[in-house]
Length: 388
Image (cartoon, rainbow, N blue to C red; front, top):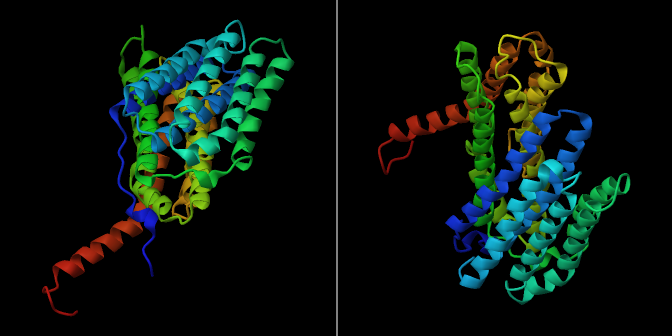
């Protein structure tokens, strides 16, 4: 069998400037969490879903960008800084993105799109050719968001709905085979934004402790919240990140690899990030009320955020043909079953969720550990150079 050329692609690692960019992007996660926590209603949740959709689309666009064009020159770094400024202003405008600062969010989003197109045009003839189709599509989406910030409802929400709808259709409206996806850099970049988002959820939860008396209940909430965040890390990073990189690297053909990159790291990662936002809201609402019953919406947010994350990762590993997706689906259903428990007493639900996540992770890992242990024992007991 001939070696897949994609596997031998030179390794390109994520730069510190890209990590800096990710930190600015994740501020949008913080703002979305605060916005939803202030008004936990279906209307606000719908707005958060729409905002995260358009913001995530352009974050992914910049991940593809730096996968093709390293920020290695002063001009490129300056343009990337301009894009970061656009993301920062967008994040600041999020609480009123459907109100008085809708125009500001839309204008900043347009700047982010223009910078993205300008940078991508420098990625070589193939990328420039792709950008001639992708650029107008992205700019159309950005203009829809900007128009949505200037017009009243119901036209505002119609524009906001049209923007992500166009973005979902965009990969099918231009040539994906013109992009070259460097698997190592691509997977590492998305893994970093997930871990930063999980870390930011801890910061967001910690902010909810301002002015709260640190009694036993408050400390227990903090520790259990961290345990849930730990198992979010476990689900994503305890081996599946490395396996997913190998799958992407071995996917033959630029078109197939690009489609897998969009579906796996674009679409499937969206519910994971949304889950982090919703979970953070649920945990924040338990602060100061550990031994009280939660309102139904807060108990649903606490369990629903974890379930969204698990289902998103189940979709991700299933799409890549990796094992483990049934464990995540079953765990998500079990977590949702804790909602009545939270309505009775918050701390009971907060304790049950990490126990369920730990049990699912251990059950999934036991067969692998047994296989690894058997291999190690067999290898250890064999004399080098002899047959068994």
